[in-house]
Image (tube, rainbow, N blue to C red):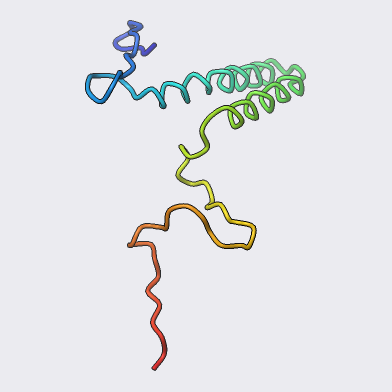
Length: 106
């Protein structure tokens, strides 16, 4: 749901390549983040009321580890490149504007 002008409106999820809405992959990530949001709210409410918040913090850790486990990690562009057993990088190379130009000394 999205609040627009004080009214809750359902956000459509795209089916196929055309149409309005958000991609299914984004919808999956948003749904997976809801328990994290709820756990953070519980921590903040407990801290504001000056109550113990350690149990809520544990719930946040569980929610976050579940999010990491069940969502596709390739959606985060800041993740470090994977390396093979012999230390070489695997996966796609960095964009051309980020590569250093190496020249041999003459």
